[in-house]
Length: 433
Image 1: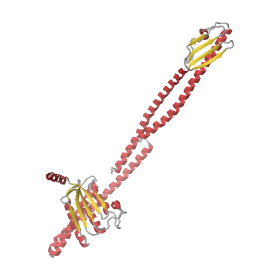
Image 2: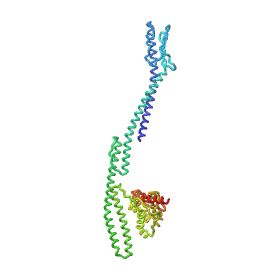
Image 3: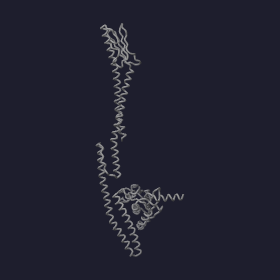
Image 4: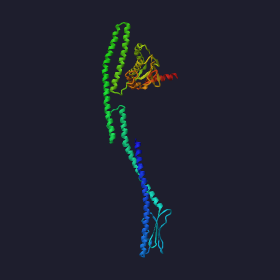
């Protein structure tokens, strides 16, 4: 924008200078030529009158008596006075080349010729042109300086407003309260500050709500954990078959409650300080194994299988509870909307570990595509929040959740590989080499 302002201002100045400069040159050129012609004619008329009056008075006609020793006109270079029966008087040297000439004849036969050099007239026009060009150049330089100053005065506030908007969009809603002395820009600054205040209040309210909700959930979750532990303890007196089933189900439910408690605690921590991260290095096999054990009873009841394949012994960086929640969402989606065997496959790509979840169902509708992760978007009359929340949980710790294939459906969770795992892999590769 600054460049455009400078160029547009200079363009206007150049057009004005060109129009007026050319007009001024034309006017001055004609003025100098006309002035020279008039002066030569006036000088010739004066000399004829002077010579005639001298002759009528019977006086002697000389250069001094008729006043031609030094012409008053700077362009007149040659004067010739011719008189009957008298000596011709000449002053100056006849100009070479083109001349501006005037001849006058008196009543007694005297003839006066006055000449001026046209080259000197042109030289005067050239000097005038140089003066006009110098003034035009000074005008352009002054206009450029003013254009730069004005462009800076307008562009700097716009850059500052853009930085304010960027800060606002990046989650820093603090108003800056800067004004620039330009009513339109000050109006924009007022709107941005007002928006920052509103966004700040909204964020504070949302964090307070998350903190309150998390705090309120912790108490019933704690009570539920205690109740499950009590069920496990009281199942010792039952029949061995029933005791094993009750203990297995209660243990799985207790693990789910503990994971949910971790997620609630994470929400509470983030609501207090959103910059606080909880990503750590963890054993991916443990999380995958935990999910398979938790979901196997549900798949067994549905007459379906849940299997695991791929590389083992991987360590990833993230929040174990959040990763487990993402995998639980994918496994549940495959149970509710998919068909056949559901497979969890772990693999390595570069410095990332990948967990793929696929089934033998009809897959994701072609009309949905990648929009399947948008909130309220669903192809099976569900809430459409599960995959959206799962993607947010994955991205919170630097991972990502993607749909690699629509038919058969393949969802992939990408996580950063733990540094210790990378070092171990590098050592193994060197030892092998």
